[in-house]
Amino acid sequence: MDVAASGDLAAIQACYVQLRDLVPTVPLDAELSRLQLLQHVIDYIGDLELALHLHSQQRQQRQQQQQQQQDTSKCLRRSPSDDHSCNKRL
Image 1 (cartoon, rainbow, N blue to C red):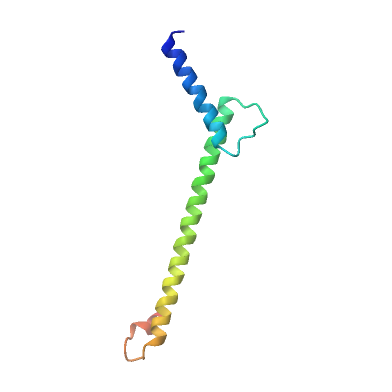
Image 2: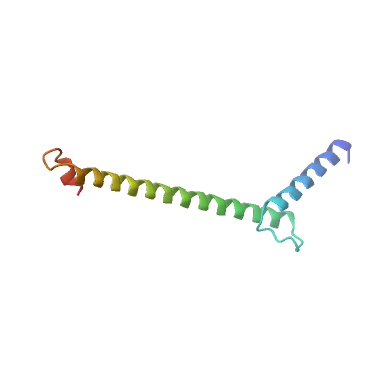
């Protein structure tokens, strides 16, 4: 094996160690193959994507509810002759 290939293998090994340290779902007390480690990483990334998606949906729902409350509040403060569109929303 030449020096360049040896350096590449060391860099790859360092990356696996870093992945193991970064992913909290990887058991610290178990020996894992590289394939098992990669599967933990993939699963963790999927969990993060799901959490972000759910958080985004919840934020959108809260914003829509706040907007509806503001619209309703504005309509209640107006007199009926000011705007007929409020009647449609309520």
